[in-house]
Amino acid sequence: MVKFAERLHELRTEKKVTQREMAEFLQIKIRSYQHYEGGGRRPDFEGLVALADYFDVATDYLLGRTDQR
Image (cartoon, rainbow, N blue to C red; front, top):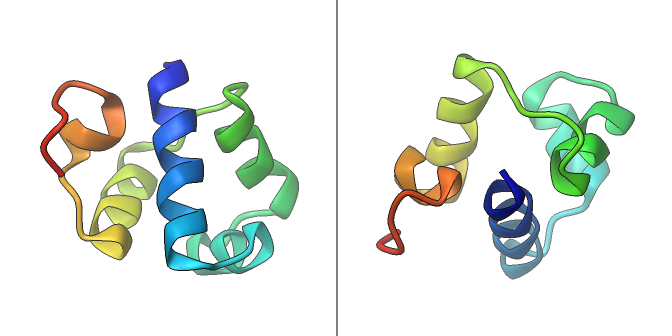
């Protein structure tokens, strides 16, 4: 799931939001979000959908199953 972590970081930096802002959006602790970008943790289903909606991309793109956003 390295691709997920890489894509999440890339999308966040493109949108110019901080990890803290993302954690607040997802209503999780910042450390949990940092684990998402570090590859140590993955969001639950609801979190994955929220991230896809926030960045206006498909969940398959976040998961690395397609290169089409």
